[in-house]
Image 1 (tube, rainbow, N blue to C red):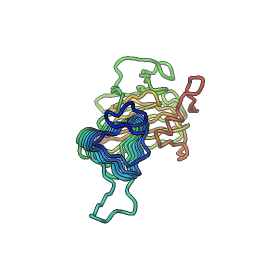
Image 2 (image 1 turned 45 degrees about the vertical axis):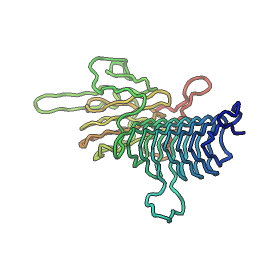
Image 3 (image 1 turned 60 degrees about the vertical axis):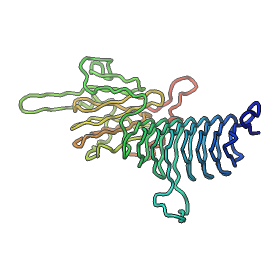
Image 4 (image 1 turned 120 degrees about the vertical axis):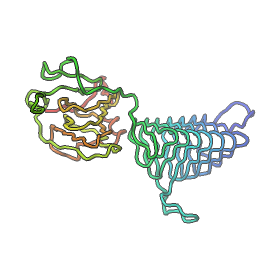
Length: 335
């Protein structure tokens, strides 16, 4: 049953007298306001708020508790998760090379995952995925996928920070909580198992030397080493977790930022000192970004490369990292 303004208690969803809804798939508690138009094929979840002058095409799916502010058009191929906010006049596109009266065989699929927010007047290009809890700043133009929890701004949109992450300086001026082995100067993150520790550094007039004693300063026997360099500052790397492989990251030249996430806590680290090492245990979602043009990142790993060890989907990671019934997170440990 549809309630129109002044028609009595709401039993299903609300439709303003000046709104038009042709769809029969509207969740309970949803409100569709004046001059909004919902086509027959659209599916809208519960407790959504579709504001004035919104147009929703046929092949569109909205989750629960979605807010769509005034002046937004949602075109075929769009998939919106739950608890998403879409600001006024945000623009979505579904055809990368549009021509009048020449639709593509299939419109591009654009996905906005649960909890994401899109600011006023932002533009999202076709085929983009905006990750869980990401935030797109007002007026931004999104030209590539946005990782979960990222905050992006500008044209083209670039990552400026991550949600709920605190900037932690890589340099450590005073001894903090010890890390294995005892006596190593280190910072223990609130992210499960993640530590930032100092390695040996010597400086004199002849130059500088950094040394890592594997048996003492790396909490696993290294099986592999690789380097990352020549990354444009706008690029994001990482954005995955490992099931069993642990890693130690050292930025030998320049600087970069690493975000560590255990599914509950998240913390951001700026690596700009070759004498500081960041340890990421298994089942840690890692993201690296803001590489300086000269950055050279060295990564030591506990296991050889194995594509099956990677978790590249954040929702899959959250499910795998969920606490066990005992209340503790079940995750493999490095040898």
